[in-house]
Image 1: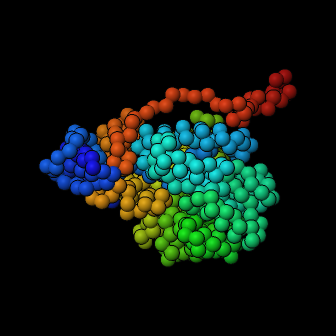
Image 2: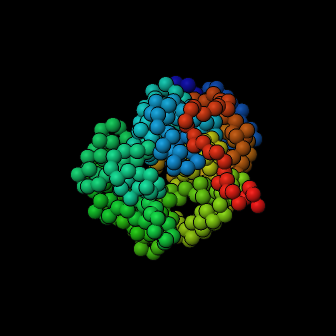
Image 3: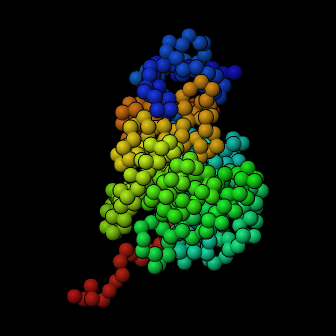
Amino acid sequence: MTTTILKGGQVVDGLGNPAVAADVVISGNRISTVEEGSNIEGEMVDVSGKVVMPGLIDTHCHISFDEPSSNDELFFHRNREGLAAIIAARNVQKLLAAGVTGFLDADSLFEVGVDLRDAIEAGIIPGPRMSTGGNALLTSVGGTAGRLIPDAGRIGYGKVVNSHAEIVQEVRRQIKVGVDWIKVHVTGLTPRHKDPGELQVWTFDELKLVADTAHDLGVPVVGHCRGASSIRDTANAGFDMILHATYMDDEALEAVVNQGVPVVPTFTFQVNLADFGERIDASPELMSIFRKEIDDSVEMLNKAKDAGVPVLCGTESGFSLTPYGEWHYRELEVFVNALGFSPLEAIRAGTSEAARGIGLYGETGAVAPGYLADLIVVDGRVDKDVSLLGDLDRIEQVYLDGSLVEHVRLPDRVDPPGWRVSHYGSRILHWRDVMS
């Protein structure tokens, strides 16, 4: 068994404890000891002046989407299954270079996530630990893509189910394929919906049917919820995780607290648009809406945290606003700046707590004896400033399953034919604008 000693660094354990000077001893694929002045023999790696911490775990990442800028692009241009899988296998390497040692992809195009996970675990391609869903379950209301979704059948990352029988059949089919999670788009957008958030498009009985069917076969269930009633019903139906969980009211908060269901706010997408939308010509109205979702949700999310609800980090990486390998740290930054977390609390949310999303809670995400040795060595006191994790040059070493990962920076690439939406221009050419 190989023994590696990371010697002389500051250890941020991912459990919320203050940084301490200690040597980290890796025996095989696990951490055996964390102590100052270790005299164990093995391969010595000098990390003096650096921070040793758990690798980041991103519990909301869409590895198969390849950074679309619209639903149109996502549903009608990502229509080549083999190409989607090949590109995802390339993009997953960007996560490792950014210090991400685990991630949850709850829904994937063509269900390529299952094959990608298996290829990573078999050592065919390098990548972080991965947990995956198949196609997200949708009603014919269409989730967040509205009329782009058919009334029945499968498109992109979604499968429309229209009856209790179809729900049971699809859940069982996905579990047969080998998913780690079943995902449900509990809320969606409709043209006439005016209230904050999204409209609940599943009944409580339908949600409970999904949860019961999946749980009977040993698989957890996660729900996309933006709106109070959806959060309440999803928690009470027995879901194991809630993505977003925004616009909670007192009743929704009570359900989440009583059930102890972890929530993943996933504010990185919103805050990137709110802060930098002008650089991509986003509308001021849309930027304001996304900023408001954060502002209106802070109080309830903090109440949930204070009541002991696990709050996990996820970034929605995989869209044009959140390209792979660049923004996985930012949810920690948002937790500090918007939610009032301390840096150590934010790191815990993005490491040991986030391990819940990959089914390894208590097994990875911490620098502690017995944990899997999924670690990063960082130049800078991230326990005081989590934003340092955004500078990839500061992430000097990545260890996955006890082994040092070769640091690869992938070269720029071009897109395959038809992969992106093409535009004649960004505006309509009106006669009056030309001739006036």
